[in-house]
Amino acid sequence: MEHLIDRAARDIMASKRTIALTGAGISVESGISPFRGKGGLWEKYDPEEYASISSFMKDPARSWTLLAGMLDVIKSARPNPGHLGLAELERMGMLKCIITQNVDGLHQLAGNTDVIEFHGNNRWLVCLDCGKRYPIEWVSPKEIPPRCECGSIKVKPDAVFFGEPIPPEALHRSYSESQNCDLMLVIGTSAVVYPAASMPQVAKRARAKIIEINPEATPFTTSISDYLIQGTAADIIPRIVARIKALASKTT
Ligand code: NAD
Ligand code: ZN
Image 1 (spheres, rainbow, N blue to C red):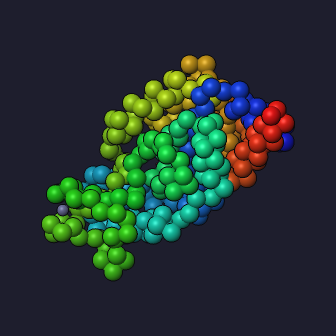
Image 2 (cartoon, rainbow, N blue to C red):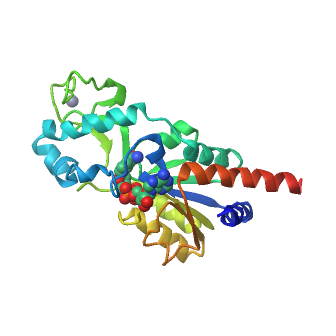
């Protein structure tokens, strides 16, 4: 394991343009459960039933029985050492941007300034009838579903629901950042949700190195990853950052 931490530190230092692709796994240690795997949210709830745009439009109140709990978790979640390590890499000039599939806003809270949100954001809500936007704090547990000033209960988190398109700007920028990087850190994503999962393939075709950080192997591990550092984000990322600092202090 230690030799892989060292290898990643050296690869990042040698890279001219490192970017990260993150998934639900990086937020697990902040208390937000992922979609897939043990303890995943969708063992209990069927996404097609609760978090698809068609079912939301049909019956917002029903979708809100799940959304209220999710928003509560996100509201109180704090960045973990994995998020903080990526923010530090950005400050050190060693991470250009993050493409995230997460909707929890934790990368920005950690201090990253260039975050492409592939699936939107649950920290804001939008009324589908009048367009008014509200911050997450506006939602009161006493009024579920929340009701917009205009009277509508079609107030939806600004995240991409099943059946909704990826915001075109995020999609476009993700492709171009993936094409232009020479190193991609793929952290805590199961590599099955497309088109997000195609970003490492785009990077690989452009000859970038792919380093995975995940406690488990994914479909990328044996296909396009250069190597997998098997462990959790909150453990591995700070160790890589510490190794970079140690190597940098030796050379100066
Ligand atoms: P996923 O749920 O499909 O897979 C999670 C991955 O994280 C798995 O490969 C798992 O092995 C790994 N993992 C588990 N614990 C980890 C840890 N401590 N450190 C690092 N990796 C860990 O996640 P996905 O690929 O992001 O796809 C799920 C979709 O659901 C996303 O598109 C996202 O929009 C949405 N989602 C977001 C959140 C969030 O915002 N935090 C949470 C759940 C789901
Ligand atoms: Zn409204």
